[in-house]
Length: 164
Image (cartoon, rainbow, N blue to C red; front, side, top):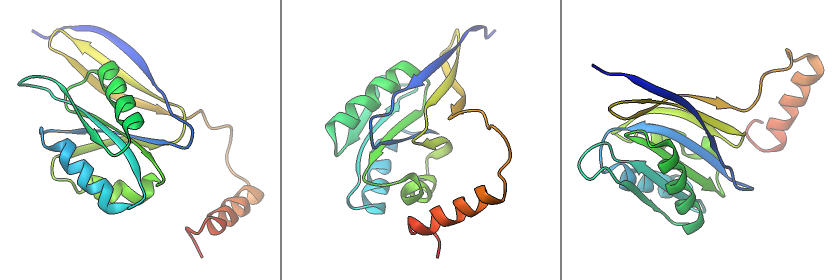
């Protein structure tokens, strides 16, 4: 019978100018398919991918076109240690540029977070292995936006080109 051994919070480091995407997949070809989805979604993107293999050799599989981001993704994947979890660090692109492509990769089952905020993942460990059971993305809200906050949000989205 399964037994819960511990629950742990893993802080996810975020380099200056980077975003991180954390998800779950189900097959060894995840790394190659995520690579293709990223590189074709944003040609100037720099990224590193790591994937926690859940059976067979049970290795951290990795790839990317930026060695620093790839190594960081590997380190984070080792800390999380949950089967079929993947970590993608990106620069020179935003999650909004790549998320639909990542979600359409056949073996991707879940995207837990895509953020430039401070990020923590909550990991449970049993006698069988580890599971990513949730994320803490950013901070607790301080209130509800008012009219000036709405205007500021609308103006910001137009200033950065996401709305007309």
